[in-house]
Amino acid sequence: MEFFNEDELAAKSYDRTVMKRILGYLKRYKGLVALSLGLLLLESIFQIAPPYLVKIAIDRYIAPGSPLETSARYAGLATIIGVFLGILFVSFLASYIQDLTMATVGQRVMYDMRMQIFRHLQRKEVAYFDKNPVGRLMTRLTNDVEVLNEMFTSGAVAIFLDAFTLLGIMVVLCYLNLRLALVTFIVLPLLFVVAAVFREKVQTSYRRVRKCIAAVNAFLQENITGMSVVQVFGRERAQFTKFARTNRDLYNAHIDSIIAYAWFYPVIEILSAVAIALILWFGGQDVVAGTITFGSLVAFIQYAQRFYRPISDLSEKYNIILSAMASAERIFELLDNEPGIQDPPVPKPIPREPARVTFDHVSFAYNRGEEVLDDISFTVEPGEKVAIVGYTGSGKTTIISILSRLYDVEKGRILIDGTDIREFAQRDLHRYIATVLQDVFLFSGDVAYNIHLGDPSVSDEKLRRVARYINAEKFIEKLPAGYAERVGERGRTLSVGERQLLSFARALVYEPKILVLDEATSSVDTDTEYLVQDALQKFMAGRTSIVIAHRLSTIRHVDRIIVLHKGRIVEEGTHRDLLARGGLYSNLYELQYKDQEKKMD
Image (cartoon, rainbow, N blue to C red; front, side, top):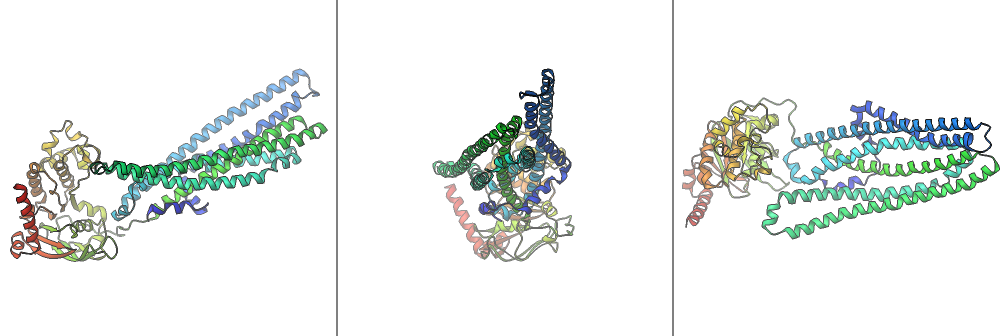
């Protein structure tokens, strides 16, 4: 799945299946939801009662000609006022508890959904993130989940209040006077037409808003992350222009929705005024004729004013629901997209000691038909140190990715002690194989966290012992706060060599049996290279090691070198043997040696 076509999802209308799935998140909180619905019913009854109390007060205690004495009238009015104030207080209390209850439920559902999405993303294969921009995935976790919260707190549940209130008002109007009730309902067809047009306009703008928000988030994430590249190449103006276009699209989408609301509510008010005018005309004639009381006419006017409010609210709430369903569809599309790399039903236990690694006729392509590795076969014995070299694009880094099972091979097998890696649990495999990349990723926590990654099983003593062993403690102790020093986002406060040493410590603290180094020293400065090389020798001792490097001088003493070219193995042997053959490795070495001579000159 790719999110570039997410606007097509939002174009759908009400879908009962999607709504049923959304409401499924409320099952854990059905008690709170039931309480909220009960309070809504009570609140709707109290909203209907005040106009009827006004009718009683006018007809019994205020209108001339009442048979009651003056003192009885005053007492009756006081009672009505007391009941009125009591209803207002209970209605306020019910509304407060109901709002608090549903807000709590909404926040809990948001929490559950965000946790579900994040857990699902953690299980996704790397290929998924290659195709889906981070900004769009963040939109699923933030904006789309927030839209669902709006539906729970002010959308779906509030519809029940409007529906109860509307139904109650219709019953009371028909009870008071059927003829005037029909006069009140006479403008309903026009109201439904206006509401339908409003829903269509707002639904269209909501679709555009959701699409534009995702585009803005994706653009911002990409540009903020790559701001150094933008500045180095002087692309600030060009990127600003691109962002202006994206931001303008979002602005226009919001303006369209504002325009829809700007004309909708005035039209509703006009139709309501027309209905009230009709009630005054026909009801006034009935009052003059004596067929209805003056209090009934006043109550009719008040009910008519309240009658059109829930209808307009229903239109708005319906759009909230449609918007929430569009967001839910995008979330469910993400959740329903199962990880392409799955653990076996019954994983096999992974070896406890360094094991033999075998690539058995392995082929792999990121894009169908474009082979990156073509029928690769080689074996690394337990404790052996093997280097893989080749020109850029020869498939070196791909070997690491498929060995760690970040991608699954299309043909052939990768074996550890004769067992296909697809038969191990991914968690076990990732702890068994330590990968140290050239571009070290550090989190924005402190130094200690970036070594143990929050694993409580790693004690402070072990952490310090590993850092000392791997030559990292020397620079850590020089930091103002030591192991508690904040490293900044992606470790920007540390040098390349310091980040590399931290990555060694991070890998070693979990005691891996297979070590994979992806050009781990190619970006290290000369002053730090000695520390890194010494750490590497300690790191690789007693472990099955696969080293990928551009600095051929760093791999002279490995047991074996494999030379890749265009996805195939073209040479294999020791450093001395390969130089003697005068093949591709010899050419690579000579080119690098000449480059070093030029630098020295």
